[in-house]
Image (cartoon, rainbow, N blue to C red; front, side):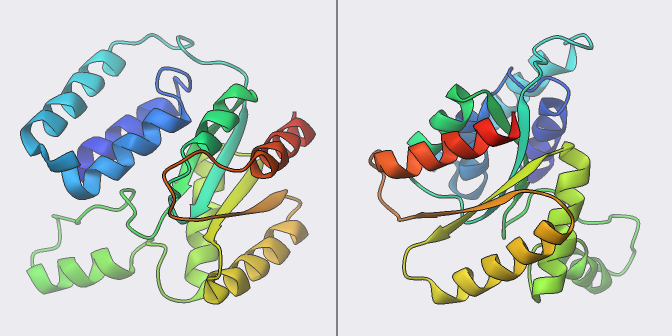
Length: 203
């Protein structure tokens, strides 16, 4: 399923409003649990790939603020809706369970293949490896801003985010910390307002 998700997200970079940020997040969420319906989920991915593969250059491609989302996935789905409504799109996803990296089947030894997968380009380990993964996403997505999503009360994540913000500030890339929770209800009005103001600044 990860290969299919990766294909869809790569196609989104050329057709950024065919699947907006919120449905893209649902696709990513499904890659971990298939919503309990593996066959239906895989069939949906194949259908999306089939539809997007025949799109012509320029179709469903709007001049939107392109963002990278980093950190947690967040359950407050209204944040993603706010991003879409504000004229932006998440084109890069820097998540711990990344779909960007697949197994290198040209490596013969299965153990070497597994080790290469674990350490190659994944957002895991040190802050430095996370920064490299984020820089890769920014370049690939042609993003002009970063949203770092952390959970309220997670002190470890807060420290990492500050290091990331400082790093990208020096690079001239605006970065905003977004703190949320595991709730599935709507985000606070204050959070939505902050996200929209950040996007407006980048417009």
